[in-house]
Image (tube, rainbow, N blue to C red; front, side, top):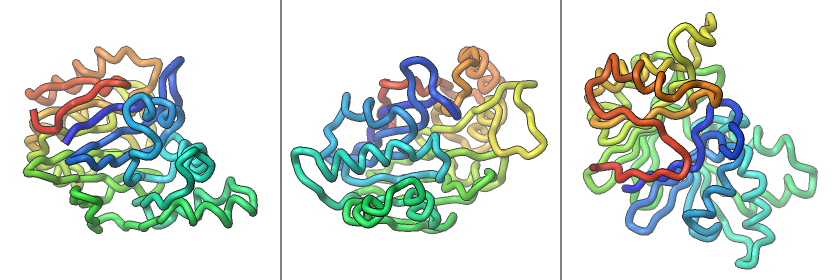
Length: 251
């Protein structure tokens, strides 16, 4: 499996950046994971609109799905003509997505998007990929994803605060893409719906993950500080998921 970062800014993008979005490719199959603001433009630097075989959404917050709207029009009105695109998302996905569409578009979009609603704990086969979902600690339902193929394991946290399911999802992962929204002493709130970089490192250590990529970091943070705080808890390789970079899931 190959992972490419389309965007990794937390909540809002920095200048020239994008919110959460990732491409996972395996055996000619392309899965777009999260479709945050700006990711559709970056996606086309790596694959064409027609190359997207399926989409998986961790949750229905705007910084993780809003580029589904321009992608809908690109598929419906693009030169190749309309086609069905499978979307795997929390059960509320179609309803949340449909709220911003005019009546005529609301009638048309099911012809493009073929939704499969998943509850945390459910599984799905997506092309050659096996997706297992886990519960998270967030303000709405978030699907933490464990994806397996060809003896490789990729885990993506989505948005979540500390919870025991996360280390189970990332157990032995070859590559663990984990949110690290906050840093020590910054943006702490009473309800822990995100992780600090230090907490992300702690989860990676508990899970025995082989490599850790930090994502969903606030765009105004010093990223080196996030890496240092995660590395205080985790002895493996820690990197920032910079937009445009790619990694083989199994090094």
